[in-house]
Length: 75
Image (cartoon, rainbow, N blue to C red; front, top):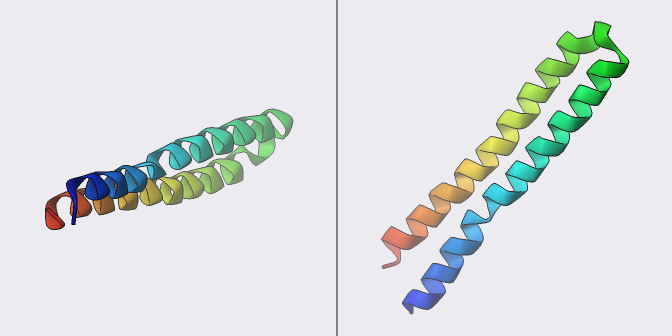
């Protein structure tokens, strides 16, 4: 397999970090809006935000691991 194709596959797998960053940014924005509107619900909003951010970050880590595997295993 050509090194150009391997590099392209790794680059596409690494792009999951962009999606995770956008998702976490939007979730944080909406959470701060929600806390500003209902301060008494801050605890519930914060816990939901942390779970969502952890899932989004896990997706980015999986994409990074796949990119590393593509680079080093398909050499």
